Image (cartoon, one colour):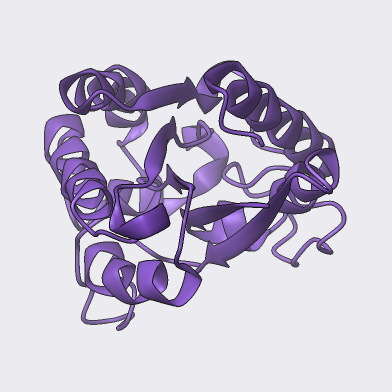
Length: 208
């Protein structure tokens, strides 16, 4: 059985567009787990508000880079690590550029590849996922003026993936925010994402 860690934020935790958490069966990680049943164990590690590598004094404990080593060790040995982060780095008060956010993601990729938490102490494979798009008109003050930066994340992440030789999936081409907060996905989008991730893992030969 392959072990796959999904390291993310509220999109991975399963926050829906109405603010409530979707049940495991409807979250993309649950869809992926069913699709890979008998071949892989899907480990969900999503924390609402998690960033790539930023600390927010108003919301402590959300720095992804700070928490990743422990997450990797808890889930080891790992065959694949999936990263889908960056939405919270877009918050208006951080004023981060797409390149700066991609630098945070690059630090996560580097940490995973150098962790020794793969099988027999090797490196796990990495799938880097650009986060879902936002609807700036509905997303409120947290994302005011951040639409252009959000749209620039996918190509910035793809460049990181090329530099490190890891797989890349552009989620912005697959889903859109559900009716509601302009940020989070509904159950149908989660279903599409889970199946797209399965197809990507199978294409890479990582699905077991």
